[in-house]
Image 1 (cartoon, helix red, strand yellow):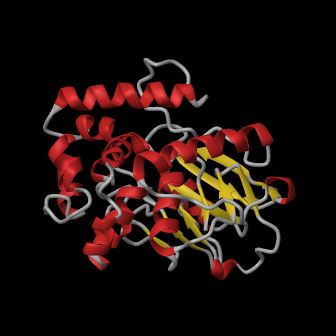
Image 2 (image 1 turned 60 degrees about the horizontal axis):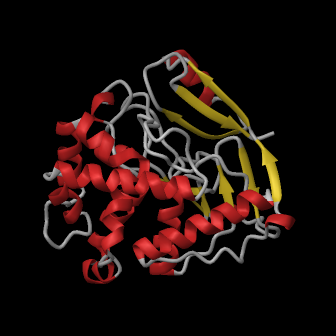
Length: 287
């Protein structure tokens, strides 16, 4: 698997390694793709926490990738917005407000609820779920949308691994205390800026081929392992022997014309409609 370098992507990778034994062979941040040597078969790689639209590559992401219901999506994308029919033109305000980790937990629970429950008993897991992709902040900002999505994910069912998240959203003081403790620990690990930032620290500014960043990443994974009881074997990725591919990343205004022109580009690798702002359409091109 190839994963994003933020908290959501890393925790998702830890879940899939612990539960299914998936191995990590690369990292991707939409600007650079770092791949372990010898990983040339694209059909054997799954990208986590990204929406990839290139050839045989499979991916699990959660951003909006359709302009409207007529937009043809890549057949190997697994995405909650696609499954629920949420597009940029039809329902942007109802877009998925949580992270890849929450979506994966819901999918895995539907597949084998007892097995996933056995791996979700750690007390620290809930704090991680609340912070991944700023889920707590999103839940309070977009309350109606968050609750509708939690119901869709099955989170209101007591057997769901997301049930503690639903229950805890009702007690605000505990949430604030956990958020502060989480930020403090991320600061100790060398991530994030001001403790009074609007958005929770997500640890995305890393270059895995940089030995200092690699060690910071290992420290973060070790701490997350203690919180979640999950693990991630990174020995399949060697930072001093990795391929590094620089992407052509662009951010443009999310208009239908720009969207259609983007889809026609032969080297298009990944994209997302992230906002209605002037740079709300992000996409990355292969060199």
